[in-house]
Image (cartoon, rainbow, N blue to C red):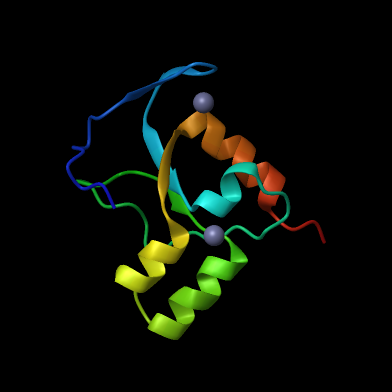
Length: 96
Ligand SMILES: [Zn+2]
Ligand SMILES: [Zn+2]
């Protein structure tokens, strides 16, 4: 992940304006109902960014046991704004 950001980092979204960045796997970006997984641990003070990944990435993560080269390579994490993150979340959470 892009740890060169600091906790006050912002990005400018063409639709939502200045926002904090959030991180998702590439599959979620345009996907629908792919599942939406977030870390169990709350965001840390020095890394307060949201992140999420889909069912497929979660399976790779379970196999690998951690975020490593393989699981991160599969997820191919991208940065989006927090507004977009909410939209992606609504679109990818599986409806019961
Ligand atoms: Zn994914
Ligand atoms: Zn946005």
